[in-house]
Length: 281
Image 1 (cartoon, rainbow, N blue to C red):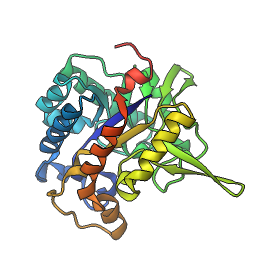
Image 2 (cartoon, rainbow, N blue to C red):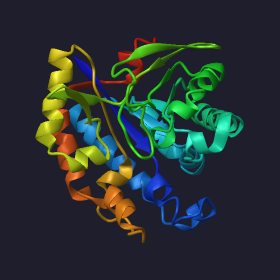
Image 3 (cartoon, rainbow, N blue to C red):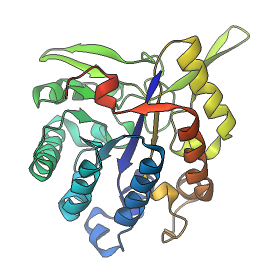
Image 4 (cartoon, rainbow, N blue to C red):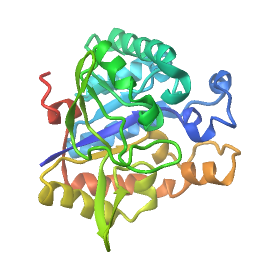
């Protein structure tokens, strides 16, 4: 069973957790760390002979086109993470369309290849922004990986399908690869534990993440998806002054991210998301 390994390419100051403490117009004043961290990730992937899908923020691609070319040169898939890392349900349909068109055009100009995959900032395709799938389809995207079938204060569709499936929208059809969860039953209640990576990879024991992926692969016969960000492997990044929750979400167990990723990469098979979704190259 092949699983999808994905990297959301953004810098430490782009994240939603710090949006209340850093203004978007201030982003260019911060020292960038995304290039050095992404290159380190590329070297790790080379050492395991693993190819991944990189969901690239357009704002990053615009400033570091050579990094995007290097990702592509090493055989990885380039997909879109939007341009400005704004929550979809906050910016609305018109601005969302402008955002994804700008990002798609940037990435295609840099790589010379079609960009067919998308992931929303902070998984912000929720009940009130489900219309985004229709716009993605209209703008030429063939698959999305934005829906997190859990309950969360920023994102989540708790009752959404857990595994890859087709979604019919008014403009056609788009494939969806939800973020992985482990479903468990306690008494008569069923709960979904988010095990797709990111902060959950830093929060939960790596043994639990591995056990969950094995269960999804062997017991449910489905692929899983693992995600993380370049800043999550960076113990030397600047410290942003923020409230406790934002600080915890961003910095907790940063030093353990890379060792845990390597441990997972050594135990499972991974492939490009477009390959797992059955989309021809």
